[in-house]
Image (cartoon, rainbow, N blue to C red; front, side, top):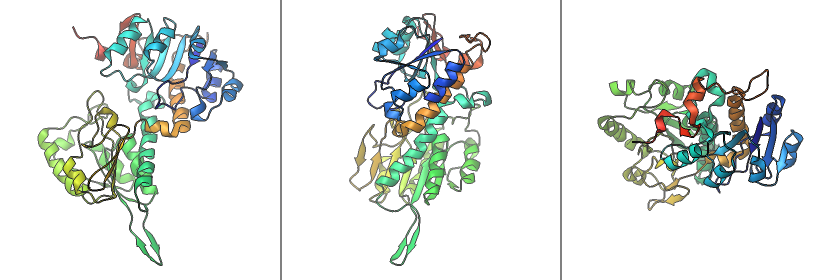
Length: 379
């Protein structure tokens, strides 16, 4: 079993798919390891630390991938990288398979067994492998830090001899992993925090963090969660009622952070142009869903928009990558925990159980075909 880690080629990507800790653990389970030179530099991991952990340092991706049976990546392999990966290799990464049929076809044609880490089922056994949670947690934290740096006032209430500085009012839209961490971080900074979500279970979670819950709690709201814990798409009638409530609330806020995403769907529009216009000059909005179309009407991917009424709208890309050292440490542990289930403890060789529910849920391609039922080519 030979494992390869290569440097990410996306300009926005600073994370790496392994750390010296996970390298040591995998070598102890019988693997040999090659890391492309500089793969961990942006995450604060120099080549010397990978080498000290037992990895061989390769001068480029081609050399690193030579003879690999397992490839660990952060993002889906590019077209150029697919050509370098040996046929039959197992590839673990955040694959972003939605609306990328050509990429899936290319990986299948190359004979790769690929696994999308973001499709990991949210069950107790797989918690340590849940990349969405580990990375969203950091995104929620970073969103508040970025918002506070753009907000031209203090976050906590401060009483001084010269007068009192009022606490900032922060509204978090979406109380999933990212939203809950945003709530907790804003509370730690001393802000007055409110939050909303269409899932009934979120109300108790929001309250447990010391924030006030804001939502239209009708009969539809009580049934608005799937069996897997995701929010269901809401009816137009409910959206209209919720929008009216949110509009009056947003007008009083200093910072708004939106985190609403439904896998495989465009991000729902939560903040309209009119809502933005109702906010005070100097207010800040952070749209964490901007890569999927955005929750905010005026947000733009990778840009900060300054509106005519003085509101800043941040559309950050790859927020976890802004905390690369922490994000890489958590992501590498997610990968290790999943890969470990594919290794026979006695022979110390790869032994994938293709009937395992985790394997079935995440496997995209195998033996030259797209295997995942959710991404089969349309007739």
